[in-house]
Length: 114
Length: 113
Image (cartoon, rainbow over all chains, first blue to last red; front, top):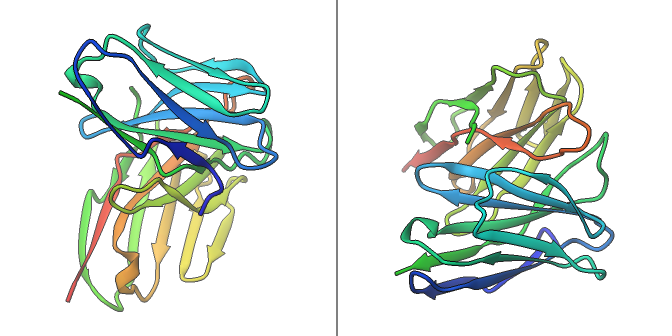
């Protein structure tokens, strides 16, 4: 158990809908990262938050947004869903920014868009 | 999106054999991490490497940070059934302000009974 929790474990929805994925980092970790894993693209970085502020953006679509709350949990919002958004979405957390930056992953949310 | 070149793509071995896999990049990395992922689960961190030339062990696993900082290797000795899964390398660029990981394409390890 990495100490990172994600809910829900599975999500099935229809095209055009909006969903929210939730992540709680390990105790003491200030940095949260979101990654998408699909069969054809592998694990891809989406976005990073550090202590409530957006720190870096990767291949995140404009239809997707995220935030990190004062209690450090994070939510990833996916809207106007398309079939191609079906994937595993992982949250990871780390303690520090620079130097030793080991990222620990949650169990993921499997999103299926029908 | 960018992915690191990881080889081999898959391996079929017998229990007790040693395993080697590697990862190469066109960019220099400050950090190399190796993860294992079981089906439907999140990646689990196996080994972290922070210095060029560093050799680090974790039980039967040994990983090395290449001297050029553009590659890394993972060896598993005396494989056992629970080693089955997908192994990913991940690199972190020396860019302050972005600590994202760039992942390899994965090596699927299967143990033949």
